[in-house]
Image 1 (cartoon, rainbow, N blue to C red):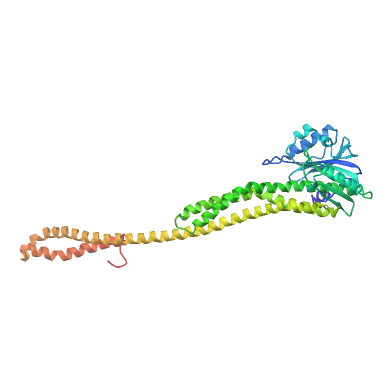
Image 2: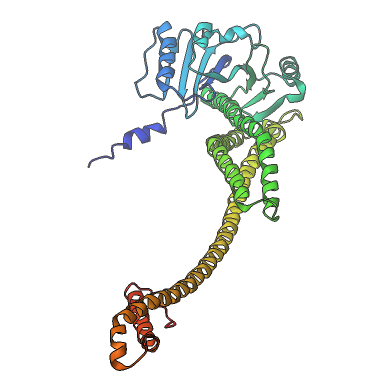
Length: 429
């Protein structure tokens, strides 16, 4: 039976990103690279950047269309993944450095290689994986390595480990996470905990880009909101013409639609990333440790308000666009009604002018009949004068008798000409 051409690729995609298996103790460094703001993503450059790192260690290359790769790079195991908006690099190494969260751990990514990255750092982290210590020892480590007011820690996955982090950037430019693992926890489960922490940090950082977008457009939205309110107030007054108000509304509506189009992807991505953050926290199945705030509580206090701000900005932008559109429709209706009134007044004026022209035409026709009749009577008189003596009439009497038939004949001829050229009126005048 013939398979769908995408059957195997799609089925394998479900198994393409396995969790790493990590022994205890070990360390990990994590890096997420996103495109430069306002620039399109260059996947070819991202692949070339990956290959440059692999070639330094003589590692095999991934397939040309691969979106993930895992292999040995020196003493580290490197895991590379390409996501919708960013790429991630995670390097794992057995054992721990003498200095906790030593910036030297990040040297698995050479400085010149980092400078040549086709993008900017979205986030980076140093993760330390240790055996679970006694509460007093662990408490001292938390106090030494994290900012107390931002520290979030919890037992996760039914007590498999205690995780901690303060979501602050340390002097070396990295986030710090500590995972202390219970003795009975297996390597696969340790890998799941670490990957979920990395995903939590990455998607938290990417979703915060929506807050930056909302803050950037906030002042302009305030200005447009004020202008829109003023224009809608102008709609109720007669001091400003409807055409001028409509022009202003159309400008605001066009700008709002442009802002909505430019922010649509970022706001949609923020919603998706927020959902992933919430999901990853739920997967950790947190339990309170030593009365400290958990990761979920930290997110509800610090992260959720930012996401609500983004959602409010999105709703505000959509609401203002709808207001401008409705106001424009109302104003267009008003303009149409006014134009119809103007058209009716123009038609009435044209009717009056047509009546006046008709009256003038009739007057001219009457005068034309008189003038033509005068000359026609004169001509008839000249023709009939030789007969005046024969029939015994004076010239004056003969001229008087010729006037009625001549005038009637001229009038009939003028009326016939007007009728043939469509000039007859309905009143029979």
